[in-house]
Amino acid sequence: VSGLESVDFKGSVRFFGEYAFRSCENLKQFTIPANCTLGNGIFFNSLLETVTVNDNVNFGKSSFEFCKNLKSVTFQGRINAITERMFFGCRGLSSITIPNSVTSIGDSAFYGCGSLKTVYIPNSVTSIGNSAFVFSGLTSVTIPNSVTKLGVSAFEQSGLMSITVPGSVKDIGELAFGWCGALTSAKLCEGVKTVGNWAFYDCDNLEKVILPASLYSIGVEVFGNCGGLKVIECNSMTPPAVHFDAFTNSDITETSICVPYGSVDAYRNADVWKNFKNIGTYPAGIHIINGKDFTVNSGSKVKLTAGLTPHDAVPAIVWTSSNESTASVVDGTVTVHAPGEVIITATTGNGVFKDSCKITVKPGNI
Image (cartoon, rainbow, N blue to C red):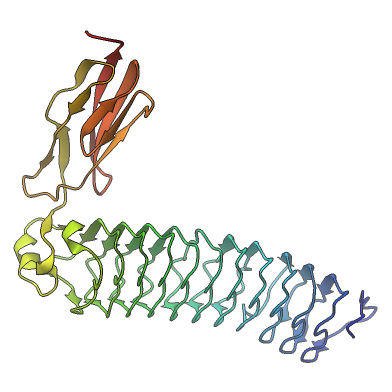
């Protein structure tokens, strides 16, 4: 049926056999009738572009595998699941809304969907399978609180920039976010207990991680090769058990560990955690010591200093300028470029507290 261009169903169809429309090069659009069951690989390697799925359809495995031209799938009712390898290699698919009848996303369901930027996962989904979104183009995703299983390599080598794992996921699978090069922040919510081996391996742009009080185990090389890691917030009074090489090839001398008040000594004496040089409590406040208002001349430099409360808070401070063309700031040193007014802000590493001062720049000497 490689020359098939269109299909018109005059009567009711309840079943399509395996690979029924395999490699149909001229079939561009298809409407799947309601109340039917599809065999495995029904559209395998076809050149479909748009698909409409009516109510109560049961999909087999690999339904659209290698449909490289598939751009749009519209679900108009219930389906049984996002099945194993359902959209494997659909490199033209850019977005999809999963119906709220779906309870599972199968293994490798969106593997290799390089153009997939957004996916809506409803709160009916309880399981995200192994390799579900490997090599996908996802830049963001919301994992609902209904999900209890996050499989091995679930989002490995995807384009995610940040991720929040809900507490309903007790155990994060191995390599779940490995090699996510664009990932800059990760938050594990209260309820997560273990982080599997290599879960964030080689996320070289990962800067900030928040770990819950419920966490008690961090596996092999979970943060291996995470050279950009700046801040880890640990919410447990008792340091979680950490595999001895959890931070292999990550420059922990540059990483600040924020812990609850009263637990600093526990972390400083715990295996692996004691190797971090900068362990302190969460900041409770910040203030710029130099003052609130400065007048300077163009071309000059001003060194600002910020103090944290309490005194043993981790000194992770982020400096920003409201107008880089007037003045820029790096580690508290303000370089003045042009006349005008600028607000310089110091923010604690966890983003909770901040303080600012105003700098007025005059041309020439004051």
